Image (cartoon, rainbow, N blue to C red; front, side, top):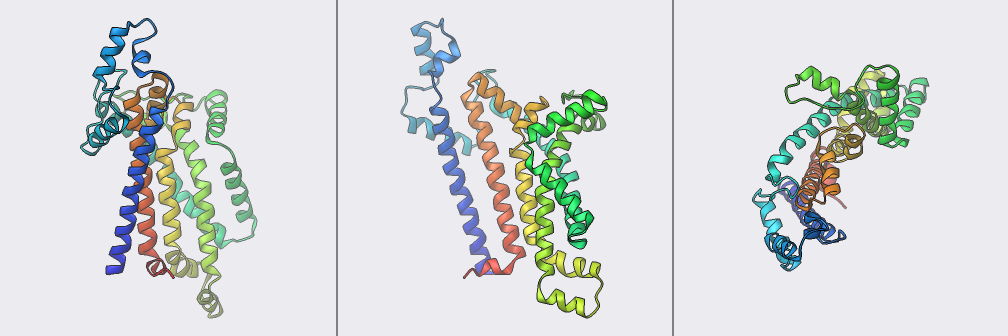
Length: 318
């Protein structure tokens, strides 16, 4: 048990150090953006006095390390500052957009995770048969296509040709749950197709690897039915790698939705970050980037911890 606690503690410490490094990169990246921020905010017709006033207000004359520490300490206390474009606190701008992205990611995950695990199990059960080859070919095709291409393809088929779903995912604040699901049908389907392929192939590979173990062969020689071998022996022993790939894909559903949200004009975090870049709203860009980083690193740490708990061999590396 002490070894397990120490190993999990090391993963958590590594995650925190990664987040610190990401925060430095985010701040440095926004510092490297071309142009003077004060002149961008005020426009080309701004007077030198007005530019100097806005530079003093935003503390742009302070050394970069001082401004980084002021921003980072604010992040640690939950104060992300104000948006330069709207003047509103970033937390009030960010919260509804984050909720929209989490809603879209949750719907896609509810569909993709059980579908991928079921397809992976069936492909392992009917290995090298028609179902396995068809599922592998379909998932490989879905993985090979970028998500924006899948999104435009679904818009053309289901919105333009058939007219079943809207091409743009606009959601009214007063919309009910059913209307919200109808509005996000196409972006959720796009994310489902992108992530199902990865999870299905990893599930199939994990089950096939366990089925090749000597104890599984012994069970087969004793006459144990194939389905019983999979559900009693193979699946429990493959939980570790399956949970790992599921958590990593959940991270992608939250962090990798930028292109999908732009394609469907969905009011989520990805669309908000693109708008912030277009308006050069530096505090909002930094806030979006750090929220994405916390989500991605946090879910990766969760995947590592699940793998450690599920696989005793990882607790005693040679």
